[in-house]
Image (cartoon, rainbow, N blue to C red; front, side, top):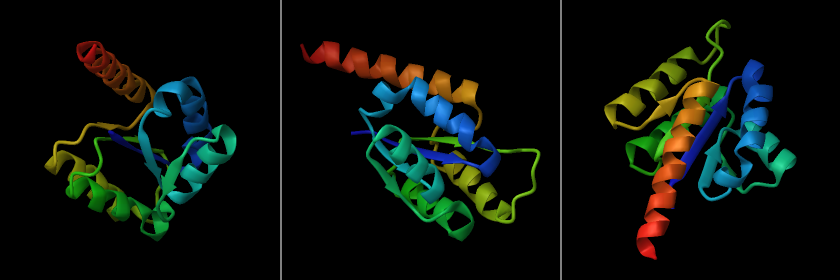
Length: 132
């Protein structure tokens, strides 16, 4: 089963909730991991099974980065707030870098996240059709 990491900065939490709401059925087919606050919000709002890491500023970004480096994450949706300085900016940059180093697709805004999910959904449907 593919693993999707979900991360959202504070000013992007509502946007992440709206995104998950629009893609709830598809996201429910995957193993989801998230930083603490984002994952907790998703669990509470939608009842999806989400494995939570620490909150981003406390090391959650690095925990997800470690999973990426060990090939346990298939792609990342990270709704970043590029207009607000983050106290853990070095961790964020490290996460973005590790995605590039390990060739893991990374969506940093809602539109690219939608495109990525649509692609994954198409591949999932093709795989299911091939089984039959």
